Length: 139
Image (tube, rainbow, N blue to C red):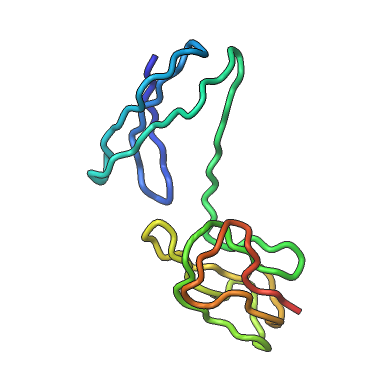
């Protein structure tokens, strides 16, 4: 059975078709649908069939600011560092821009969620970073 969903991701709306797989031994070819706002294609891909009664979910959270644990600022997504606005010894306040991260051709402002003094900047412009990687340490 094919079900249609409207999905909003990063402020853009997509019409997605999802096909339910009824048997473990049956895998069907992914279907493609056109984006309702842009003429890009979104693919529904199934790598492995699920067992009967098993539910597999993937959740995507929209995060525009970095997530801090203690006195570090980490990246909420993987991408490339385009511009760094802070340097060691600089005092920052919650909400200040720390850097610009390019992810999927979009420029994302990474902001401080706590105040402090920059102890060290662990990345440089042009670096590729992964989700959760520490970018800046605070004192």
